[in-house]
Amino acid sequence: MKNVMKNKLAAVAGSAILAASVSAPANAAVVLGGDDGWEVSYGGFINLFYNQTEFNYDSGRTEDSAHLNEGLLPAFHTMTVKTPEVNGLRGTGQITFAVDSSSPKTTRLNKPGLLGDSSIDMREVFFNVEGDFGTVSAGRTLSLFQRQAILKDMTLFGVGALAGPDGGGTALGRIGFGYVYPDFRTPFTYKTPDINGFNLELGIFDPQEPAASTGVGFETDTPQFQAEATYTTPFEGGSFNMWAGLLWQEMTVDANSGLVATSSNVESMGWNIGVDLTFQGFNVVGSYYDGEGLGSQLFNTGIGGDGFTCSVALDTCQEADNDGYYVQGSYTFNGKTKIGVSYGESTQDADALNPSIENQMWTVGVYHDVNSWLKVIAEYNDYDSQNGPVFGSYHGSGFSVGGFLLW
Image (tube, rainbow, N blue to C red; front, side, top):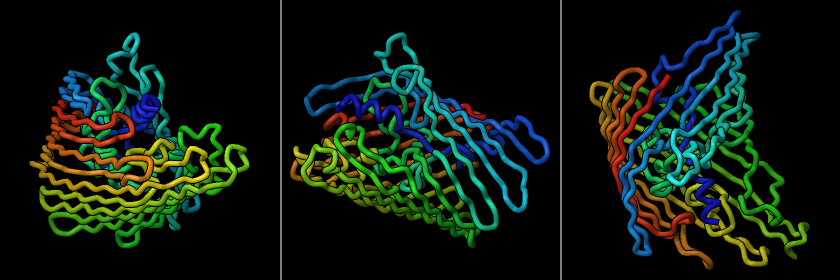
């Protein structure tokens, strides 16, 4: 179970929508061409960091590690198509895939890849249809619940926590240390037009089942529902942004599978709120979430104690209570150099079968835009995890120095 979870984290942890990223340079996309109002463009980035870390495990073992690893984000490559406007409708199609610039120290032949090979991770495959009525979207993209938390996190373009001192793939950033990873999922969504700075987006998502559910008899016969409301208003010298999100999903341990005598339900629900205030060069971000059956890092990761637990007979399942937050403050000099500090926690309450999970992390970072296509970063991260589902209890700390090339 520990190896499965580690691979899952390496495969999906550390991502965000980078189509029209809030931090990418405005002139990043390369326009490849188009006629009669059509436009095709290509954009992306590659990053790599040097990490010097120390891990102290509850067993008493200590490991120092020098490791070259990508940060929270892998390399992103995005192809976007924009349609001409016809009868008041505008369309956008996008395909984004991600590859790794690093690999585990133990990988055979040192091949890069999410799982230590040359695999490609398809992050986004979606299209939008937009008009005066709003925007309808269909396909795989970043989920709504906790989306703003990861996009506002300063470790998005850094490293944050590492999923082990010697592993490959992406780092964790603040995933599990302030928010649950929203993940890239497949929905139909509707977003309202902008109403004096207010937007509401509603979606039905392909429901999620635990990785350990094969042959167990879990059944999801209704969609997963998510929603996000945002409000943004500028004022002289700054801007104010706030958001709120919801998630709900029901899953059944099905008696018809022949594995259990009676059916049992697992109901996952969560809500989150946040604010982002900018004035002159100062910025303050705060994010909080609460719910049950969410998991401490990844939603619905399994029946082994992260998110929910089931009895041996699988006839009774109990959701765990989850909550967490982070606060972040920064100052940007001359529009190019941001210095920031943040702190966050994620907790899962103990139940009859499992102890509580408690994760917390401090981050201090410097993020400098050398020019429109080059960004350099230095971070120090100090984090504790108690009874985590992957590595148990440990303390990690270290420096990371690296950079991004964006186009």
